[in-house]
Length: 294
Ligand code: NAP
Ligand code: PAF
Image (tube, rainbow, N blue to C red; front, side):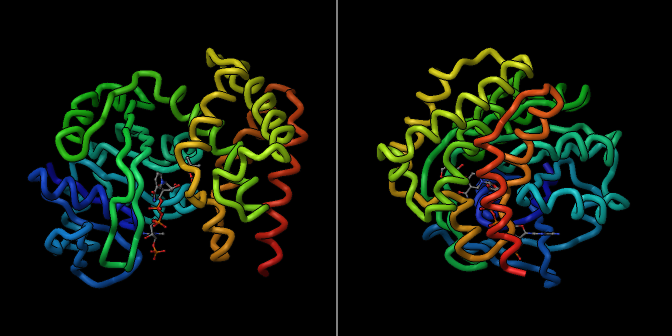
């Protein structure tokens, strides 16, 4: 396939490298203007990728968007004139809310959503480390996207484990629940994920989960607070030594994904007239930190 990876940061470089090794013709679209970019994954030989090729973008079968959620709308609005209506657009990022915007922006394109638990770390702009094996779920958002099940095989061949999930929104909501619980708290307190197992965080965690459960149920998702508490506890344990993505963003004074995580939850809660005071206070705390940088 002809594939363009838009936003070749940690996760984008990882997929670009694996898709290249699986035999696809992969090109990048980064913010930087050089016409080629060399990327090394772990200890493999560096690969030279074309960058910002209009021809590659216009002829892409797949546009894999690995930008952070707040970057998606602006980047795709700018590139819209170069995106062919047959190109399958796949969004792979934490948080929710971009699909609604992108499906209206690129109205004719098949839209696929993805979530991954692989870990990637960018040692430098030319060197990415695959820091943790994980699982990737893909699923269609619009009617043409729902017919793209073949993509699961393409991704599986490059970097398993990949499944096609016809209920991808459920998977994204379950991931959102985990991110609502772990990300703002670790960012505010500047602690590793595992610290959230300590007793002083349990009341807040439980309140966050209870609020998220009500919103998910109102969205028609079959879940309950025991199930969500268990998933959150499992992720806290499995990623105990990790610093959450939001904590890293806050430490480096980069805009976090709070608007697309807790912000998205609050927006949906308002639509269903559900009170979310604890999530609101975490949202305000992170926004206050970000506004303090100005
Ligand atoms: P990242 O390293 O910051 O990657 C995003 C990339 O997009 C950066 O390289 C950034 O460029 C680039 N970019 C920003 N605006 C752009 C534009 N207009 N045009 C082209 N490129 C642009 O972040 P990441 O860690 O890969 O994460 C991406 C998403 O995946 C996030 O939602 C994250 O939560 C999720 N995720 C990450 C991991 C992981 O292990 N890293 C795992 C699962 C999910 P600059 O480099 O110039 O800033
Ligand atoms: O955003 C993150 O950091 C990750 O999604 C997670 C699962 C919270 C682990 O750190």
